[in-house]
Image (cartoon, rainbow, N blue to C red; front, side, top):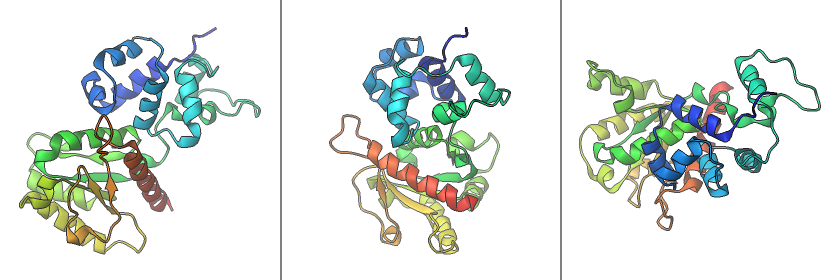
Length: 260
């Protein structure tokens, strides 16, 4: 009998696929490096640990309890051999009573169709550390996201590639901070390009989303779009999972619009 797929195996694989290191996980989660390393080695996660990971990978609310049970070894779900075969597309059809493995463990892979939309992060260079966290969280939720330091190749002309990335994006997240709203320069050019494209979008299309990284004023030219706050003044970490859930709902809606 094959060994059951463990949370540690899934967590390690998903982190590796997304290029998220232990150091980065420490920034993304309210967890110590030592506790992350222990779970990656196979120690059972606490309920709080499993919930943090559920938030990071945008597990839907109606699946969160089942995910936490599975993560803590309480779910009684399929063996790793069956799971791997299903992922590779070689497993035989499951019985109607059981349903497909993905139906019972939908968190095994990123949500289908989410990566069909391209997300661009418009930001000030001074906010790079925080924006890098946004980048990884959006990627972990299953969306394709463009960030200059990750996607610009050596030798490319950033003055050409960045406007091109804006033009070919389906959603632009305008990351706002006290520095970004007062800074003149290239970030304003990116925003200007995004605003021009926003005017061409059909009515009701989610394209430009103001994203506040901290408490700050929203520029007048962005006030017509509903903003989302990714910070929480009262939380231990400073970020807000509630804000991220709202953002992911908007991106899922944009993916639905794109697929229609």
